[in-house]
Length: 368
DNA sequence: GTATGCTTTCGGC
DNA sequence: TTACGGCCGAAAGCATAC
Image (cartoon, rainbow, N blue to C red):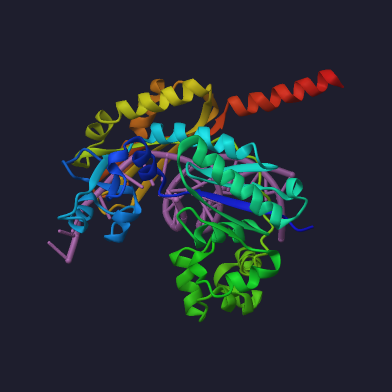
C-alpha cells in the first residue's frame, strides 16, 4: 500500500498573524519578539517576516542584534502574544482536520495529515485536497501556508520546506529518490548539527551519500536503532504513521530573572507569577501531575533541572511551593554559576485524556 | 537480556 | 565583539525488576 501523507507549515506564523491583524505592517520588516524584561531590549526574535529575513534577521537572534540588521529601515518590533496565535491556530487547524483521514498537530504552526483513504492512494487527488486546505486556511484566517505531500512523513516534511511561502510541493512516490538525493542530510528530520557532524566525518553530506552507506558503517557511531532509521529516511521509506494529535504530556513556565543570582530565595521570589499561571492552565484543563521539575538556565545559557516524582497525582501546584523551593536550592547547590532564568515544569499528567478514555471504556462495557 | 520507570539533557520551532 | 525566550517532545543515561 502506498500512503499519501502531507505536512502543513504556516508561513512565518506569528509575524503573519500580526500582519493580518494590522495591515499597516504589510510590506515592511516585522519582528515578533520575546522581551524578557531584564532591560529594555533584552530578549530574542521569535519569528520575522520575509522582508526582515532578507536583511539578515533570524529566529532566536538577540533583539539588539536584530536592531542592527534593520537599522535605517522602517521596521516593526512587535511583542509576542502566544495566546493570540494559539486561538488563530486552533480555529485554522480545525479547518484542516475536516479534510483528512488522520490529523496530527505537531506544533502551533505545523501538522501532518494522512489522506490515503480519502484519495484512494491517488497523489493527483492528494494535490487537490492540499489545494483545498490552502484555500480553507486563507479563507478562514487570511493566512498562507506551505504544504508538502509524499509517501512518508519525512518526504512530506522536506517537501513542505522545499517551496515557501505559499508553496505546494507534491513528490510522487517514484520521484522520491531524485527529490531527496541532492539534499544535504541536515534537511532530514532527526539529523541535527551533531548527527550532521558525525556523518560529515564519514564523508556523508548528501542524502544520496547516506543512502549508499551501509547500516553497519552507521551502526558504530549511531547505534543500531538510529542507523536503521537513517537508512530508511534516506530512501524516503520511513514508516512512522500519522497518529491523531495527543494530549500534551507536560506544561512549563520559565522566566528571566531581573538579575542573575546564586541565591535560591531571590529566584523563588520571582517565580510566583509563573506558578500561578501554570496552576491556572492545569485547573482549566482539569489535569493533575505526578512529576514536578525546577528548571534553571545559568549565565552561560546552559540548562539544569531537578525533579521530584510523587506517588500519587497532585493538582494543587500552589501548595507545592516548598517543594519547588527545595528543588531550586538543589539547583543552586549543584553549580558555581549564577542563575539567569528559572522555571517550573509539571509532567506525567493525568486528567482529561485518561478520564476520556476511561469514559469511552465504560461506555463500551455498558454497550457490551 | 530486555522491559520499565525516572531523571536529565538535547534539539526543534 | 558581544548580545540571548519560552515553550514542547524525544533522546540519553541510569537503576531496578523480571
